[in-house]
Structures are given as structure tokens and as C-alpha cells.
Image 1 (cartoon, rainbow, N blue to C red):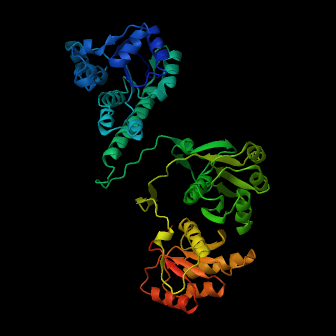
Image 2 (image 1 turned 30 degrees about the vertical axis):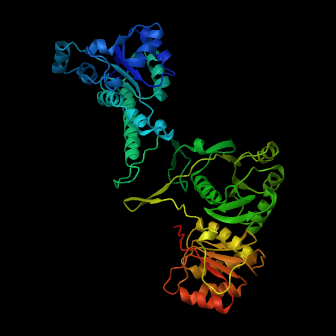
Image 3 (image 1 turned 45 degrees about the vertical axis):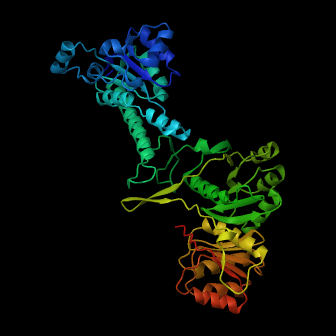
Length: 510
């Protein structure tokens, strides 16, 4: 065992005591002297195990309401002393400082306290000072000290000292030091982000400690990882592991369906982050049927999402389609039994959680950050800019189309009729190309575009799009407006008695 050291003493100062008992029992069994303070000292005493109070070592009691317990040279000297440095060893002897070979810390739960909505003073008191200092000191001196910096590391540490009779290798100590600086950096990031909630400092600090290695990235030759708490958002009921591309499509599906939360039964089918089928009906099975009709070809291998429980009737229809993922707030027992019939089909229950407030992506040699697009067009936003007014049915369809358009790659045109997506033109370099793509696709699947509506994610600089739309039978338009040539499109619509409304909000999605 290379560079192994046998521990003689340990300092324990933890917030969470769960899982600590077997470690304390093993340390005692190995004859390792235990130092502790506060609630941890009381916990060890109640186990009937001898523990040395830190205040006896420092000759100082815990002061300032517990804010200062371990911050003392006799504690940090024992941690930071270099065992092979003659000067350090001499000073330890001079000031009667014991070497501390093991440091076990579990920090105050700052993040959980913030999430709980606790008052600021309670949050401030959960900023650990002594604990974080102990972690940094012990991790720095990993050549001589092993630092256990979180309760998640208790089991691994117990296995090491049990199987190695209280000894640790330099490799093990360095590994735990790395874990320790991960804990400390994440902790400080959370504290900074709390204080910088108003973004007074233009600084990006992201720390995600839940990491998952994916089979690969977008393509097999690329590595892929997911950092985040997937289980906080979903309950996975069935199927294979999600891939990088699956996760991107699931993200797009969840964000899109969030626009239709608590509305009538709504079903969406997505492919490559865009909706290829979408419908709202009186029943979910009808919504699925009409969503699939929007593009049954693209639906193959897609991601499906519903805004309500998937029932038996809907599941029976879904089961005949090859699809990667099915997402819903819940599944009936009968539906689950049917959908589990394909072993690789991923079934996810979407929990009622708040979506991220920001989006982050790499760009050039840096990072782009922006607020999430939380603006959803509503009837209150609409400005009728033509002589002709849209009917109530057209207004419903225009809003419906606008919501889908917001979540479709730019340049985009969305065609809707009776709350059913007929077709989209997605990710085109020209808005005219996007419209023509949508029209061709709608006609290919034999949709009647007469009295359909059109949504655009950005304004029309020329009247060509509204003219093409009218010639295809489309009868109402929703767009942001804002072009210096808006009047050209308005004039054309007026000449054709074609209602057009402006929202005042652009919804580019690059």
C-alpha cells in the first residue's frame, strides 16, 4: 500500500448525523481518539463512546451562539501541520497541539434553507464558516489528512477504514481532497448566487453536482454528460436509458406543453425539438389521433407528451407507433400495462416543478446566458391592424398557433385550423421558404387550408408571405409586427378582407 498512513485521531463536526454511528463505532474500535463539539459531541456521548470536547483542546467554549467553535490554532494547527516537517512538528509539541489525521464534516444545509423560503436571518445562519474552513484545511493537507466532506461519502470512508484497519493511501486521501473542494466550491457558488439574485454582479457561476455519463453526445463519436437533478423533474417508469438527443427533445416537449397546462386535453409529438403533430380536443385520445395526423411520417421515433393522464384508449393508439419517449403527468394502470409492452419505450411522469428561469449555451470561447422566454401571447396582447376583425374561432386558433410557433426553430411559420397543427416551416433561412414548406407539407397530408390561420415568429418585411398564405386559402394571420414596412402587409390584407393581428412580441428561437 503506497504512502499509507494509520490514523490516530479524528475531528468530527457534522450537521447530519444519519450514517455517522457506524463510523464512530469503527473509529472507537480502532483506538482512534475522537474530538468533537456541539451536537456532534452530544451524539457521540449518547452512543457511550469516549469523545474529547474541542473546547477542552482550545480552552475556549463555543461562543457567539455557536458561530465560533473550531476556529482556533489548536484545531487548524493539528490539521495543517506537515508531519515530515521538523519545524511544524516542533511547534505542535511547543503549543501542545495534537495531530488530527481524519476530519469529518457535513455542512449546514444552506441550499435547502434557501429553497424552503426561510427568512433571511435563518438563511444567513446556515452559511457554514467553521465547517468550510475545516474542509479546506484538511483537503489542502491531503498528504497527511483524509477529509470526509459530506454525508454522501460516509459509506465509502467506512469501507476504507474497515478494510484497511484505519489506514489510508495517498491516492485515497487525494481523491477525498478532490471531493472536498467540489463540496466547498459548490457551497460557495450557492451562497454567491443567493447574494447575487438581482444580478448586480455580471458574473456566471454554475455548479451542478449531479452528473450522469451518457452513452454519447449528439453523435456516437462525441462524449455526452447530463448535469442536473432529473429525478426531481421526472419519475421514470419504464424503458432504456435516455440519450443526449432524447433529453433535448424531452426539454423541448416539456417547455412546449407548459404553454397548455390545465387546458383542454392536448397532445404533442416532437421530432428534433420541433412539434410535428399537435392538437387539442375534448378527449385525449382524439387529441392524439389528430396530432398524429399532422405528420404520421415524422412521428416515427418521436417524443410524445400529454397535458393530462394518459388513459387506456390513448395508450392503445400510441402502442402501434414506434416512439422513443412518452411523457404525461400520470398514466392509468391500464395505459401503463399497454405502453410497457415495448421494452425500450421510455415512460416518464412529469412532476409539477418550476422550469429554469434562464437558458445557458456555449458560444465561441464563452457562454451566452439569457432569461427564459416567459412571454406567452394572449388575447389581451392582440392589436387588430386590419379593417377585418378575426372571428372568435380564429382568435382561438391564432393564440394556439402562436404558442406552438414560440417553441419552433426560426425562421418558422405555423399553420393551424380548429386547434390542430396542420404544418410548420421550421428553421428556414427565409420566412417565404418556411411558409412554402408548411403549405407543401399540409397539402401532402391532404389538409384543407381554407380558413386556416398562420403564425409567424417575427414580422413580415414584405407582403409576399401574406399573399402566398391567402392564395393557399389561409384566412387570418398573427405576427409580432414592428417592420418599417408593416403597412405593405396590412394593405394587402385589407384588400383581401383578411384579418391580421400584431402581438408586439417576437419569438425567435435559434
